[in-house]
Amino acid sequence: MSTLVGSHLQNGKYTVEQELGRGGFGVTYKAILHSLGQPVVIKTLDESLRRDPNFAQSQQQFQDEAKRLALCIHPNIVRVMDFFTENGLPFIVMEYIPGATLDAVVLPNTPLGEVTAIHYIRQIGLALKVVHQNGLLHRDVKPQNLILRQGTDQVILIDFGIAREFSPGAVQTHTSFVSPGYAPIEQYLPQEKRTPATDVYGLAATLYMLLTAQVPAPSILRDRQPLREPREWRSDLSARVNRAVVRGMAVEPQLRPASVDEWLQLLPDSQFASQPTPSATTQAATVAVIPQHRPVSRPAPRSVPTVVAASPRSQLWRYVLIAGLAAIVAATVGALVARQPSTSNPSVAQPSPVAPPSSPAPTQEAATPAPEAISTPTPPVLPEAPEPSPPDEPEPPAPTSPEPEGDLEPAPPSTSPSLPPESENIPPEPPDEKAAEQQQEAEERAAEAAREAEKQEKERAKEQEKGDGKKRD
Image (cartoon, rainbow, N blue to C red):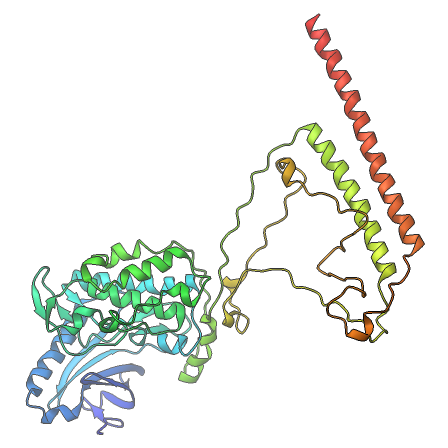
């Protein structure tokens, strides 16, 4: 395999330093532009094509790529700097973009958070709109052709190698180059209409991969290998983004949105908080910033009930209920502490605390939390909240079977199913007399508070009747 590494091009204007990759019929190198002392990317044809009888045609296609790319000027499209021919090979000089391709960021198993992924996809969608406005189709939209610029949240679209012109409504020939998983069904057919829906499929498939870290099933196999929807991989994804991906990846072109702009409108609106990464000058440092974009979880916002002023009567009974509950809970906790068996007894199994329920999160979130994964808990409703209906009001626990405050769920040793057989016959410890007295006092205080509230309510009713009588007089 021939290589141009170490070569000097254009009379020493450029020095080729390293090979970056090969794809289709082109080879990409990193070089130095000596006049500015800055790195550039130089793309040329594979020298092995010289022996191909269609080499002249390949040269013309390569030159056409340079012209097409030069027409598409956008912050999210790689910029063409120069074009020349040397030793019978054509060369395109483009800006060098330090960073990592999105497939390197996501694979093998680090899916992005929904907000981050959509932020990247919207950038590429805007770039594709410029491509389509110039009468071109990129036809190879995939994570490998998207570079996350180092130290920023900007994504750049590269590689216009198989881009082609399109005429709306006309049946045109497609090339044989496809990227399985990202190429729509029409790119597998020799004669088919070229429409922006082709790039819509690639963009939706790219979002699929960013969210799931899975390459979608090839469109040519979808009749016997149905597409597994993104939410089947990640239940935390919103239904709206799931629908947008599935519709953008419809097998039949006419079932997809007709334009990139129409498809982008299907995505949920979200505010992306830019998180700049430290700048670096080496490829190793570029890899180091990749964890900045690891998966995150965005819990759905919780609704906060509207606060409505409660009537004096409901407030009074609420305060009585809260006071009674507080007294009973305090007595219950005291009784439990007094009756708690000693931890030195090896035959009694100790209850394990039960974690409170929480919403599911992706596996990777714990490994590398990102700022956008932080969620703010919804504050509890204060006593001024709307008066609940009687069936929904909490009832105080029965004094005979108190429940402990918190998440512990101890049970008497004689009935616990988790105890070993030899410990089942251990008699329960006698109840603590002091704890029983505390519980009884709490119940009496609650009853007294209820009587006092009832008394105040009767007095208030009498005053109201007197006021009504005066009004009638």
